[in-house]
Image (cartoon, rainbow, N blue to C red; front, side, top):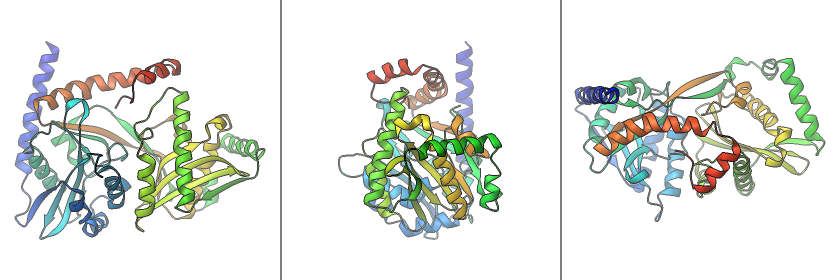
Length: 409
């Protein structure tokens, strides 16, 4: 009986949320929303999209940038891949003032709208001009989505609490109760590299010196930013391969790292990004032996540490710790404001961060199947399964992952 009561309450909340959306869905008379569902239509927006990035009321992350999304679309919207673009574009007096990048995925027989570039994009948000009212545009966009045929659910992962969408998500969407934290280091707190060095405790300094001494037994340690092209391509392949080895030993799998097209997407991005998006591939070596890598992006003053990896056979020497130190110092020298270690908040990231931004997952049912998938699976079953999954020993996880082809989403 308790479950029925909870379900009824959710239905009431859902009706209230829909009424709130309908009441707010009044964009200016000079404005209109368009649904862009093909690659050519999206690519035609390049100049306007990039202008909107700079004029947004909340600075978008790299994962909403035109360069990131275009590279993903060129990789996964090619014939045979079947990615279904669904981008909501808002115009006022002919100018792009609102963008909501989405795509259709088809898990478990459902048609689900997710962030465009999911699961590669680590954060999701809408982009809205500072001259507009985001709440009105978001409400109007949701009103349009409800009229689409054959869409079961809107599912939005990793919505940062400092994002534009987060300001209205509680009113319009259902919280999936799947909280994460995105750790970061505030680089503006350090006036110089010596000030950065002072953030370490005596114990931390000794540990880093010990790591470097052990690695130097293999050869002189060097840290290099690789030129994009053949050298970065080789590093991308090695970084992904070694990361997958590290995960496999622990019985883990990763949707992004296991995707066959992932390396191709990153290489595509390295060749297409414009000055606004700076792709950074770094490598640490001992002599001629590669120890560790980082694949990162710098956008709007933020360094996004997308993939960090090390030679799996050298895990006990902790080369990744020294690599993080070099990378953060390089970001400080480059005048960046933030080093984003991204979700999830793992224990090893603690010493490299100064704060966290909470993230939430949201959904909105658009059909009966979507209602049950959201309120039963996303809100209850999925969190429970994940809690069990991450408590299992590596030996059991290896058995589980040997019998399936993908991790829990």
